[in-house]
Picture 1: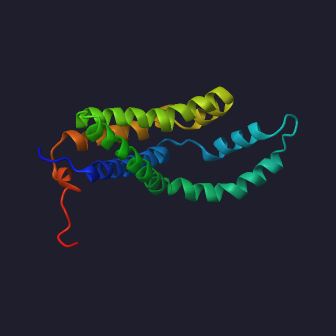
Picture 2 (picture 1 turned 135 degrees about the horizontal axis):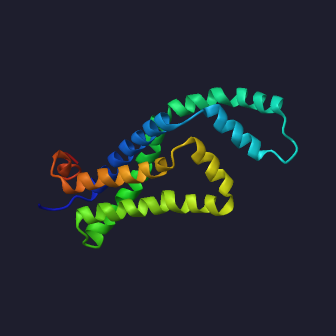
Picture 3 (picture 1 turned 90 degrees about the horizontal axis):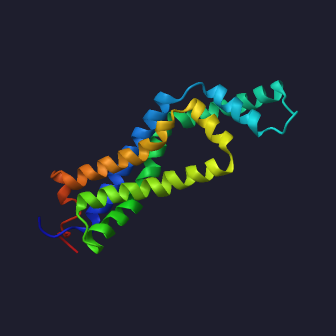
Length: 180
């Protein structure tokens, strides 16, 4: 196969990250239930007991629903940018596994994806679950619980694809500049 380019793994990670972010945003748009019900439930749970005020809740909802809708519809692009950054960082980890530790590229891609899911999804979800289970149940009442795994699974599969399948991406980052 020749010499392995250091930069190629970062490119793989960035592209896999961006695409998985876009896919996650699309899944979020497709799977979210009633936004008003979701936000109303969160507001109700945030209020101290015996302070339920329907008028105040409706005013708060009217103030934030417009901004939230814009963010929701921009989520594929926003998640794509966020995951592009994560992808570059985890691409460095993939590079370290393959070049530094001598792991096969495909195995390194799977290990990188598993590490991603543990760090970015597993630990934060575990902390939220341990601190307040009602938050998780409210979120999962509106959003499909499987959506939590979409970024990590998509990232891992794309990274595995780039590592295991020969294509034009195998030459990314491999050449030297013609002029210095």
